[in-house]
Amino acid sequence: MKDILTAPFMQEMIHTCTNMYAHGWDERNGGNISLLLDEEEVKEYLDVFKIIRKIPTGFYTKELAGKYFLVTGTGKYFKNVERDPENNLGLFRINEYGDGAELLWGYSQGGRFTSELPAHLMSHEARLRVDPENRVVMHSHPTNLLAMTYVHDLDEKAFTRTLWQMSTECIVVFPDGVNVLPWMLCGTNEIGEATAEKMKTARLVVWAQHGIYGCGKDLDETFGLIETAEKAAEIYLKIAHLPLKQTITDEDMHLLEERFGVKGREGYLS
Ligand code: 2HA
Ligand code: ZN
Image (cartoon, rainbow, N blue to C red; front, side, top):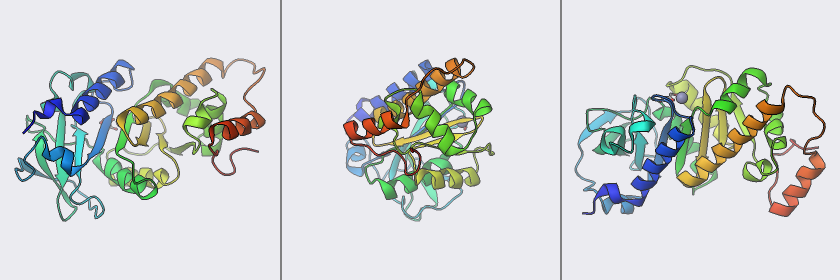
């Protein structure tokens, strides 16, 4: 059996948590990540019949039964993942009934997965239905996106159009735009269901006055997606109070669609 700390998925997870902390998006225990793994890759590092602990999840998922996830721990700090991955991360399988987790590695001091697990697993289900390649759900508290939810209209079309206009690459990176949830109580099945519903039509879901959820096929891509939206929000906050002289027009957006082979969300461009 190979050392799990050398696994590419583990290295990538550690690197991503460290980088997100460095960006100031994950203060204290803020943020959480779940990465869907293939059984074959897990078997290279772990005896999948050796269950350390069974942990209730508090909800039922038929589609994810038997699937393996590497997930950040509740109350754990992204800052500390690199120093002590086995305490701050956990690798588990959703049991065959889809109503609990079987811990195979990690959460070494008796911990458990993030309190946002419902939002993560429901989002995995929703994204896998539209994109079978999806592997990552990532939540964090990027400063500028969060700030923007205090001063910008939360209407999804208006919010998306503003972000698209803040930098040329935005419509190329997130042509489906950004969906937005109003402030809701976090850590609940309700916000999980609402997030998953929003994930049906976009890979980015803003939680007003809280943060953002992003989905993608790998950690790098998902990080880059949030990073691009966050950069756009930063530009917005730099210019919002100044007289606007020009912007990226809808005609420009159509040129970008053609050049990069993407299609902006239906009805979002004139
Ligand atoms: O895990 O970010 O939304 C801490 C959070 C909760
Ligand atoms: Zn959060």
